[in-house]
Length: 240
Ligand SMILES: [Zn+2]
Ligand SMILES: [Zn+2]
Image (tube, rainbow, N blue to C red):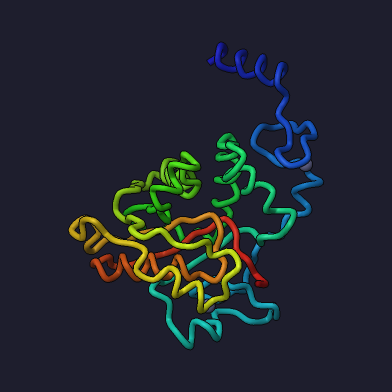
């Protein structure tokens, strides 16, 4: 124990922990500096009880948003932690495209700030899969890394084999909601329906934009016999 503490002290002395955004020295590893932390916009209640979209009027509680009333999602509940904006996106862009997989612990800390009910009564955590060609290019799936670490922390099994992306889709980037839904349709497949039958699943992704991808994943899993799908994302785009 003493040896472990000594090693940690030496490592901290030689490589003092730094804020992953502004690089200022911080006291504890895997933390943002107070200045950067202050600039993050956390998504707070009240929000739609199904999709988790925050309501602008703070007096609204236990309500469902217009979009969910019009068309009930295939997932029973979705929650996101941070608003996706020019400042907050620096973390996930570094994670996805800058090989900064060392950011996993800090991103997990943020994920765990979501309403705890999202993590309850879950049999398995599943990431939104990448198509294998994209996987080869990037060498890892950011949602998979997050899901695995989250599962370890919460002692919930994790599996990246239950849902596969069978169709290469165009980037959802510039598309509107309807075009996104069309683009992603039938992009996923459950290779072994027996493995998901009756399961309560937590789907994980980094960013929720219109929710079209997560809706398609949830629909595919439900069709294969899954009992319940919940969704957790680190970020949400609030204004398109
Ligand atoms: Zn900072
Ligand atoms: Zn909603």
